[in-house]
Every structure is written in C-alpha cells, then in structure tokens.
Length: 127
Image 1 (cartoon, rainbow, N blue to C red):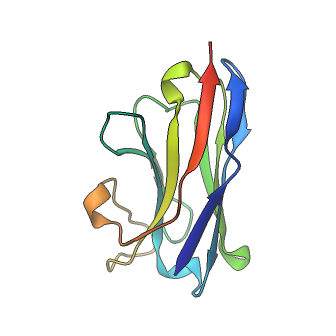
Image 2: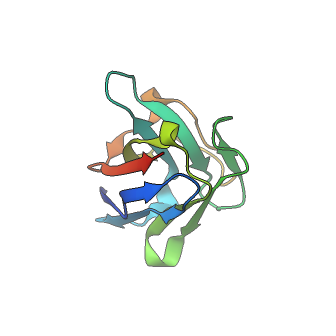
C-alpha cells in the first residue's frame, strides 16, 4: 500500500487543521492505521491510532480532547481533525499502516509496528 499525507500548513495557536491520508494499491481496511509526528531534534512519536473497523481509537495524552481521527474505508482515506492547535504541535506529521494481524477492533501505538509510511506533511503552529 502507498500512503500520501497532505493538509499541513501554517496556523496560529488555537486554530484548526485537517490532515488527510490517501492510500493506493490496496484497501486500507486491511490495516490498522496511525498518525505520528516528528519535531526537529526529536524522535518520531505516536499521535493517534484507529482500528480497521474505525470504531476504536487511541490518542497521545498531549492531543486528547483536541484531535479526532477517522477513516473512510470505502474511500481509502483517513484523517485527523486537529483543533486548538498549540506551538508544541509543530512537527512533520506522518500517516502509517500496520499490516500485523489484528481483529477489526485492535491497533498499535508503537512506531515499530507500522510497516508502511507516507511522506510527511509539515504542520507549523505560530504563537
């Protein structure tokens, strides 16, 4: 599966952005999906994950209550809605697919479990 992230940009603190992850080559229903981010000089970190069914999600503590992840399997897309953005949210955001065998309700929050990565999209939040 090939993944392409888009939707990043420059936004003021308190603003909102919606990122998009478009998949091609295979249906994303085959994968649990996740979003990760990497700020300059820092390791890539977990942001959000969603099960194959879309009914189960998880978020990093730093984004809980502000980010919402969703997937539309029949359109092969996934996106997080990011609200009340903070300067600490500034990073390159990556979407990823995990091909491990999961039930339709499971997912991973670990970078190492994800097999397919898209090119990132830059999100910059100004104070």
